[in-house]
Image (cartoon, rainbow, N blue to C red; front, side):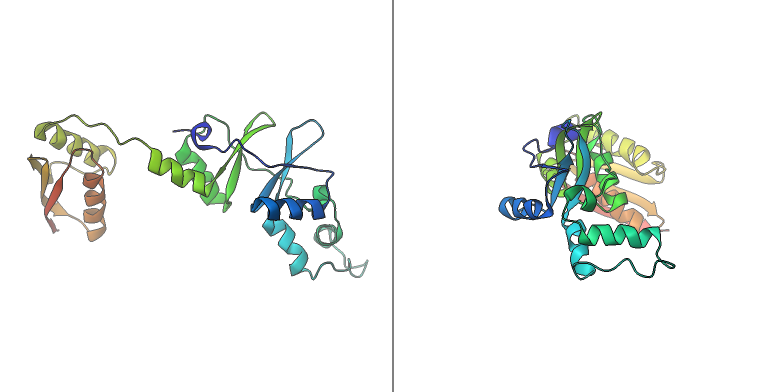
Length: 218
């Protein structure tokens, strides 16, 4: 599953020349917490989020630039963001984006690492869509179950392969048997966390109807 499969293409945008008043009215009317900002060529040039707007409250709607001898570039930036009513001055100009063929797992990783709620999907600078956290959740629910060969022996082979491939475990230390689609695990594990990871792996193998855990801690 890729970004293009889960992105929302019904995007509400605002121009860089618009006013903050217009942006707030649009966000309230659409019940959204962020707006992609578009330049005169129709390319994305920034994002305006509720966090950007809340900085005005943080600074009390504005503050002076301070003593000229002590004023820093940060002070000037804060002054502009807290006093200007132009979207281009208040928006976040550094846009973190993904491409349509970015795997959904990578999109989630990008959002987690950068602590953002949404990420634009772009081709060059052209905005194609937006992926939000809720879009990712919808993608998880809609994702087709992994296909696994039918039959007890096939299930056992699939589980052994995933124990080694997904968890890097020595399958000689863990005996996997399957009867009537019920999995029996025997052997030793190094920790309760390892046991839980194995349980989650088995439960996610399509065709498994139950699990009997006979694993013991080493």
